[in-house]
Image 1: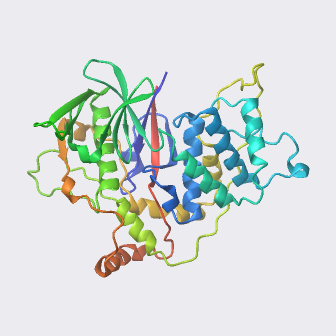
Image 2: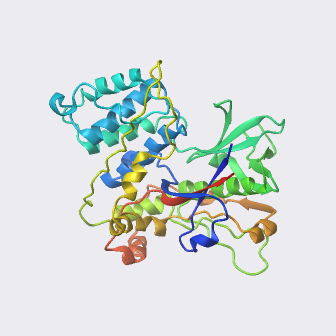
Image 3: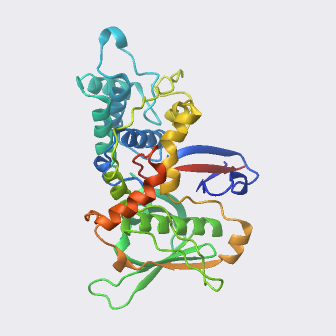
Length: 392
């Protein structure tokens, strides 16, 4: 069984220097999931987030109940097909769509039943309803990492907007919010978090986890840094300078959530026109119990639709994300050797209200930063290029 590692491309470096001799698959993906998608002001941004979530659901990364699968599937059908029309659609019109890993005839019938009630709902409204329900799922926006606890029991560590989550047998057993965490570090294949003392505790405590290898520990460490910086800080910490810096120089250097919201508020142009791509149709035989006889590909069918766009249109729609967000790359062998033991401590006092007003000086600064993108400026919330490596 091949193991899959996901890494973020660094657009400032050549791709050939970031990949190794393995099969590679490239895809656009969301890196930071907005806790409240309703704050995304443009339809095109919400549309791309919907595509990512549909991929997450179809691949099993975002588990859903039967009821939620049916509800989200009905909104996806409404967004793509519009109102139900018997003459145009017939009685069985969604069997070629895929919106669940183990899709059954019973699920399709429930989706059609719900879809027929959405008379007059626009695609944008359907996508907003999709997002409002998807954000309530327990695994929404959670980046999972395999690990073991101090007793050697298999667990999953999940990084999200709110902090670090601990899962065992698909159940969340603990949660550490970002304000509760004082320091994160890794040494070899071990990952550590230092916790603030509780109300009735006197001393800080450190909790350790065992990752599969050193690279996995470093990858988790970086993901934690990026998520904490993006969601909790007003602006990123500057990277350390000089030749005698102890530890890693890695810092998240893209825009934070606060900066992204401020920049989006300054966008002064009509909403961009775009066309929603058509989902790939699947013609698979069913088994006697109503399930499909072979598994569905984990890659989202809508990614194929995006890849069919012209090169100029892709550059116009995606280029702003490259300038707004830090991306992670596969570390070189030299980096692995010099980063064997790294620690990072965040100053939690720097965390401020992300919804504060934009001062005139800050507004001018943001305008200057965005000036070079005036012709292609677009609201972006955590969309980057991701590449996957599959080790045989």
